[in-house]
Amino acid sequence: MAQTAHIVGKVEFREGEGPNLIIRPGPVSVETGLIDATLSWEDEETHNSAAMPLVDFARYLDEGKITLNA
Image (cartoon, rainbow, N blue to C red; front, top):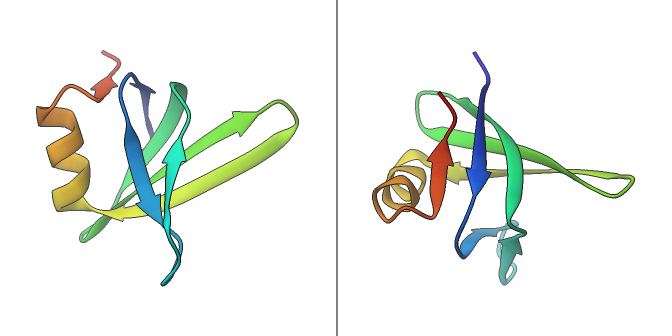
């Protein structure tokens, strides 16, 4: 089930073997699976998504860089 959240700090993800990319601050949709979390967001007319290991997602939550909406 998707949750809504806000990026409020520096949150990065990696596409394949490429460099870390930053998810811009603002609202995101979060789907969690057994091993990863997928974050989806819109930038103007572009739809973006990023998958990250659950351990990284949990760290961003603990650090207050991602906040889940109630």
